[in-house]
Amino acid sequence: MKKLILLVVCLSFSILFVACSQNSKRSESDGSVPKVNAMKDAGMKAGSSADSTMGIKPPSTQNADVLLPEISAKYKGIVLNVVSVKDGKVINEVTLPFKEKTVIKGTPYSILVDSFFTTFKMDEKGVINSSLEEVNPATKVKLYKDDRIVFDGWLFQNYPDVHQFSDPEYSFILLKGEKK
Image (cartoon, rainbow, N blue to C red; front, side, top):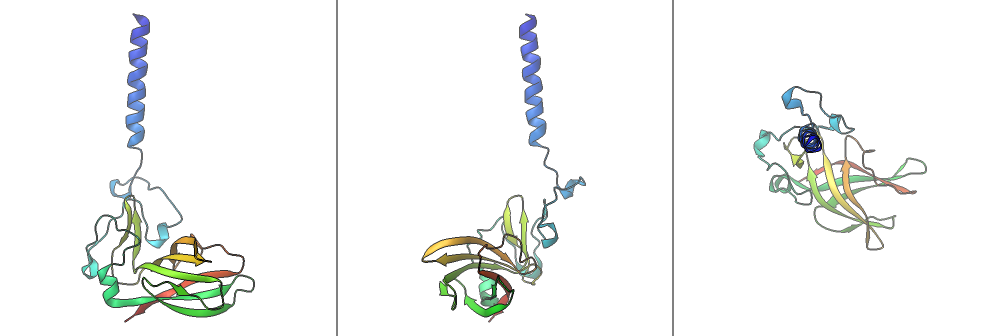
């Protein structure tokens, strides 16, 4: 009987521990200390939510590969600098349209611009674009070398070193959105 009671107590304690640990993620909204990450200064805060400034009312998360109608109405593409990793000099400035695979002259690469967010934010559910004002511009790109995808990720204007594409010769830096 003592073994049975001990087993029930241990099992109850385990269930309580698991239930409490499931709720241990804190957010700024409850006044507790948020989980800090490298992107906090870029407008990506834990517990943040999209606002409806500039007429954008995004869903709680957005597919990063989808070009939002509000963006495509105002922008026709992006502008990137192609930089030499060896000396840090700009090789060329490239204007790239949305959703078209474009060869980057002077390099073995081509690029496809999937989306552009003028105010990129990330919450626990995913990415959002919360405004048409260029507060934290970011672009989702696919970079190809010999028709193979070598990079499928984000380039950030304000934080070019975050999640940067790694290549011994070239670096790609988002300069701005190209307005219509």
